[in-house]
Structure formats: structure tokens, C-alpha cells
Length: 335
Image (cartoon, rainbow, N blue to C red; front, side):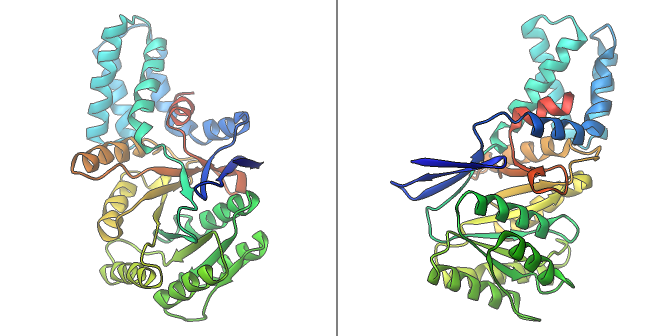
């Protein structure tokens, strides 16, 4: 086994199993933590101010409840965190509000831990990754950034421009293909499913490691377009019966609880395997990850599993897309 470290994401190649795992690089992530903390400051500021007093009392918990709700953690996740926090305070006999803040960070980190999972490619060649999301979520940009990280780590990538509904989407993806020096399959005005089929077929014929399928952005209320997503998935399975191997949803962190509604709707339609959360910089609604984590618990209890957050983004630069770490997120959130 050998590793190639470039930028902030490393890809490990296990020659015995041909698997590739996208994971954090084994080097300091101080610069990333600084950017993450800066990006989450609006969400964390209102929560952190709760702990500036001198007493741990009902007023503190009431203020914290309000702060978590304002951060779009949602009612259920807020109740969960408050209950867990009170138990931690009791178990540790904590008397200082500043210490309670650290306990909250631990509680949030533990809640988010099931969302922490590396993206693994290479079990199948090519690994087919289907990416969905509503317009404006940063879907195509995230695909471009992920392509860069994969390419820099030695994986060969083929892009499928199946977002044929949005004006200039094909051109936008083509720019990323040129910038990353990877191949792209596209058709002017073509059928999204047809483009996807051709890309998967080409990816297999050309020996690519990954085929990234950029599907059309759409709202979950647009039922006819959601049916088109189902069609794309069916057609991909015709081209490769084991695919798609990953079905990712890109969500905008600024949309708060609406992001959770999107996750539920797209999961029902496609069966999601992972998330990319973008635009966390400047948002006051980063608490929605707690709501997503709690929903993941109910999904797991029903016989499924939590939908992991593979990557989070806090800016426009390539290095602003990073692998998700639950405790890093919790620590950055509370500063």
C-alpha cells in the first residue's frame, strides 16, 4: 500500500483489494480548522455567548435551547442535545459554564460521529458516483472540486454532463474538466439518461477509476424531474448492473431545515449514500447537521444506516472542500 498526499485530501491505494479511500491527509489541518472556524462563526457565536455567564441554571439551558433552534438544529435534535448535556453536567459535577461549553462540543461531536465516513472508491472499476442537488446548492462546483482532489491523488476520472436542463451547466462542467485535465462526456441538448449511459460505458471501456455523473438540479417538489432522476439511475444500472455505487446529494448549508427536507425527499427517490454540505461559510444555520444526524439515527433504527457527510465546503477555492470530521466540526462550531 502507498499513499499520495496532495492538498488536504489523501487517497490511499490498497493494491490487494484495489480500493481507494478518500480520507483526511496525515498532516496538520490547522489551516483548514481556521477556515472552518471562520465559516461557522455566525452559527457558533450565538451558541457560545450562552456560556459567558457565571451560573449553570434553567436560564442558561433556556438560552441554549433558543440558540440551538436559531441555528436550525431543529426541535428534536435540540431536545436530544439538551438532555444529553444535562446528563454530562450531572455526571461530571460541572459548576463552570465554560466547562459546560466543552461538554456541549463533546455531545455534538458524538451525535455527528455516525455521519463521519470516508468515501471509498475502487471496489468497482469504474466507481460510478451519481450527484444530485437543487439549483444553486453548488453541485457542479463540488463535482469540480472533488474531481481535482481525486485527480491530484492519482485516480482517473471521467465526467458526465447529464445536467442538460440548466443553461450553461454543460459549459460549467467542461471548464472544470479542462482545469482538471480530465475527460468529459456530453451532448448538446441530449437526454440526461442517455448521457449517463454513454459515460458509464465509456468509463468502463477507457479503464477509468471514477465516473462522476452531474445530474440536473431540481427541487424535490418537481415530481416529473424527480422521476427523471429515477430514470437516470435505472439507465446507469443497465450500463453497469452494480452501479451507481454512490448516490450523493449536495445541500446548501444556508438553507437550514429545508436542507433536511431535501435530504429526506432525495433519499426517498434515490436512496442516498452520502452528502456534500456546501456554503457553510457565513451561514447561521450550521446546526442543521445535528438534525440530519438525528434523522440518520431513525433511518438506522428502521434497518438502514445514517447517510454520511463525505465532504463539507466553506468557500469557493478547491481547498475549501474537505472531508468531514464530527469533532472538528463541533470544536469549530463552539470556537
